Image (tube, rainbow, N blue to C red):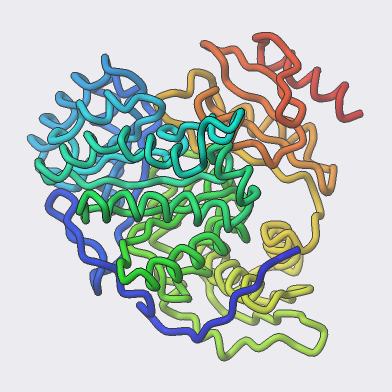
Length: 455
């Protein structure tokens, strides 16, 4: 059952607090900043610097890299020094999981640190009557104290990245596992930041389910507005995939929110080279500027009719998907009709089906959920995605996840029926739902296991 939210459309309807990230300012009336993430090993300084240069050359305005362990911190210092020597001054962002000490070590080195609330949560509340939900919140708050105080001292920004697949058990037990739960997790950190008087913070609400991502972000915006503390919002659909589907899912989610006037930074997550994320993000922003939603009312059958003469393929895809995501997350759509004299009827139909699938209106083929890779990925994930598509694409309603590592994989693929997750160098494990059902195997062995399970 979908929760539909109604509103009036206004650009920058949600005016967020202005904050500073490195030499950039976001929030307020500043333009939306485009972000991407490296997929090289952070310890491979030369490769990471080279990739950051390529991203800068195509218009990336903020770059993130994963920092899995304390040994990577020294590499981050080298990366920063080399990048700055090249004259690239865009903000550098560290992505840290499970390691509060690593996050604290990076304060003052990078411009922003992204942490997941689920990594700070204590889940043993209300067991044998010894702890309460609020006791667990206070414990989490104390674990966060040092990081927030250090960031405040050194002017380092923080992103609280709430992810659908890695919510803490205490949140899920109380709020379920949908948009309300994501918002509740974020609002706990709004309170934590307020309690410590820390203002240099950004929030993101990510899910591979487009509607959950849209609803959670809008709910957070509304609840922050009610508190009088409108922190900036980072937008993204996580594990969007690759090709047409990855672009459609990203534009349907991010674009819908941009059309509502939300968003201060964004990242298109594609299982492709990072430069492609920026190139499509730029097309999406261009498309958003051309859309007047009032020109596209639904017909009496709940069908969106989108007629366009846009000749740029990616801008056309972005506009159609953004408009569809906007309408479906507000009043719901039952079908889409797309026409464009510069593209064939087959291409128009493929785009319509991809949009309907992204919005979960009509499932025409297998949904592939895949992460965009990062330094934690130690097998050829992009190749794995293509092999999974070739062998299993014709199962409407089936969801298969192809994930880079065990850090995010099992949690972020929670919505999938089956999954392949990187486990060690060139090895993966197979999941059925949330249950691991194989040892470390090669990709080909994993595909054979999936074949047996699906058939």
